Amino acid sequence: MVVLIAEDDEDDFSFFEEAVKECNSATDVRWVKDGEEALDYINRRDEYADPDSSPRPSLIFLDICMPKKSGLDIVLELKEHPDIKRVPVVMVTTSGHYKDVNEAFEKGANSYIKKPVGISQMDEFKKLICTFWSPLSLFP
Image (cartoon, rainbow, N blue to C red; front, side):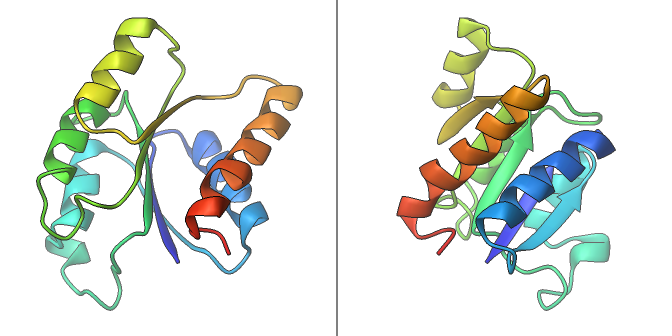
């Protein structure tokens, strides 16, 4: 299974990667650091042109606030991509504002998770990832 994490903060990426690996240590986690790079990966452009080295993801974690292109703009493009439109997209952000949540779902996100703050929230986040996505056979 391949999980693509679009996240501009290295610490947040490391945390998400750890959470995913706790669900299934064999998961292949890929990291892109901004919105344009996420679209390059999905569209297999530039350094991601080779399908063998840039496999299609089974799950995408997409930060809303990223350089070059917003996650909210990206999710629209993902849901129109013929090979990606059925891949679950989980929006992650520090905002839990009702407007942001609604906008994410309106644009095609499958889920919305507020980034954890503090150790107790981090543990809950890890449990949430495994509990929520395991029944979908993403983390066998």
